[in-house]
Image 1: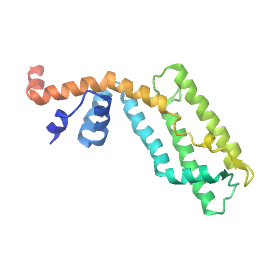
Image 2: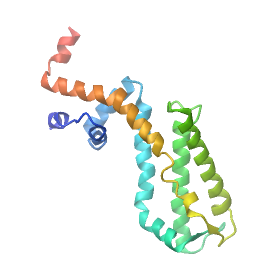
Image 3: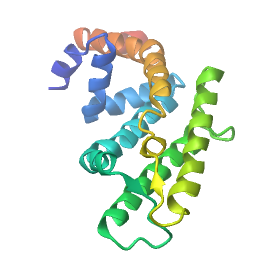
Image 4: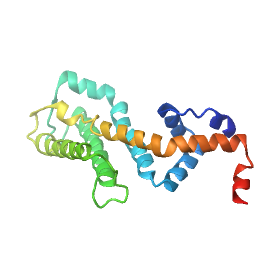
Length: 195
């Protein structure tokens, strides 16, 4: 079964992304990325997909907020709509902060190597989101209108993700896929290389 999966490894970015849904190949790819000293890009992809899934899972209610308007819930939200909104935006806030701490913080062991312009853009976008979230949503007077575009920061990490995928594809996946295919066609290759 795994040999069939290896035979189907496309040397494309789409082919690479398929690995993340195959537990066995993902584990091998992860270990290969560790060996290639690029594991932070694999981990970033996983965290990025979790961040995006918050928006996907709440798409209907976020669209409803966009259509009907959103107001600040105040310090103690009482109605169910406000409670749900707080729950969603708290999840977004926490996940964005977690991603920043893991991959952008100067002291992080997983800090991504990115062009300065992209890193600065993420810093600015996260700072603006955090300020708006704190001042104009959570700590604002109850009922005050909220600019939803400043809270829905779904694309905040998109450019970083593009860079991470590009780096993974060029520096890890292309050689991983080639090695895997070569090893399945010649299973004794590894043994002969060791002799």
